[in-house]
Length: 70
Image (cartoon, rainbow, N blue to C red; front, top):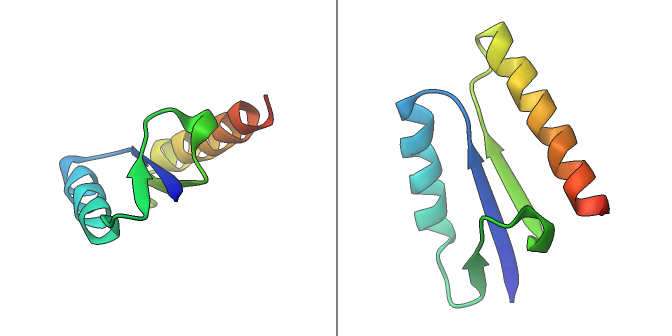
């Protein structure tokens, strides 16, 4: 059993894409969690066109790394 987390950053299109990704991943062998510390896999879906969105994504990646190390 794998535990997957999803963080969706950016616009409504990203949220729709994130929901589609979770739908594709849905299976009896996968659980979804919003608790980063317990996830085996964390998907961060973001925009790469806007500089502030890029920085937000980088900050989120580092935050997830810190959470996983604790």
